[in-house]
Image (cartoon, rainbow, N blue to C red; front, side):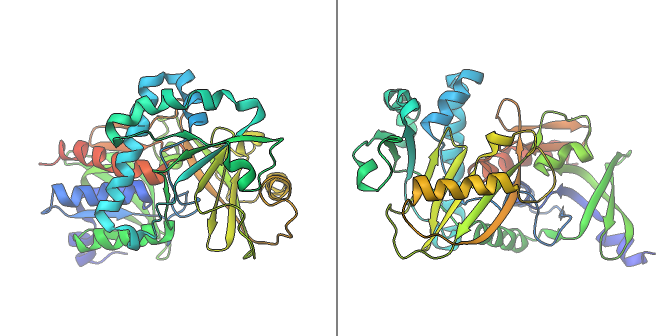
Length: 382
């Protein structure tokens, strides 16, 4: 049962964005800036957005040489170079908007461990630098084999380290909080516990069937235009979209350690499938999804025991050999992966815009996707 006041005011909007993670919030923020007199409403199914926005490692990264070479074989060098430039621009967008302190951002640099069977990556450093030199104003990647022994990595396994001084790390929880606060300052409305079940075109816009999780009632929200930004979950609302799949990532966090053998930084290896960083005196390690791709293509937030044990083994044998390590926390997050590893922003029907497909790079790409979503939204406003 709804009141007159609810029906006449609260359930009406010009723009509705579905999904309260980084992509959805950046889309709202850009819409607020472009269309300041419009009523903008964000609908999110949970109190804290589910997915990967606050369940990732907090890397603000351009990507690695290994990842770039693998991706280039699939889509070509020009596309990969463009995507890396978009990541760079997205990271700068975060920093300009909020400042480093508010984001918990640290310009710690990035490092890629190069294993014996991957020494071709070192030879590709200069070639990858050509892609980004004009944008950034200098070389991004540098081969630094001398760091392997200095930082205590086993030299019979790790042959070199590729350094990228332009990568950084942030606190995803702080990033979400300041982004939510900013869109509220602009006058947008954020609803949690609002599960969107269906979208239906009408003569005047879109009817949104939204389940009120707490009130146990179905709300009929109306908007001129809807932007769906639920990433991996988009096919559940728009089944005609089939080119994105869930990809669960496993993460563990150690208890505080007395010794830190290698410095702060964002670390990757094996084409980005593994990643680790210091969080204070704790070490965060995640990845290994490629060892169980089908099993990890799921919407279930759960731990994969085999992968968690594998990550622990890497701690003991590769990252912290000879160190007694206790695991303090474990979790998983669900990313959205597309076959070509590229974001997709377009119309999915009349008055329906979609923005999705960060492919594990949501921190860097969400601002860029949000900007594109806002542009398309404006074409349907009357």
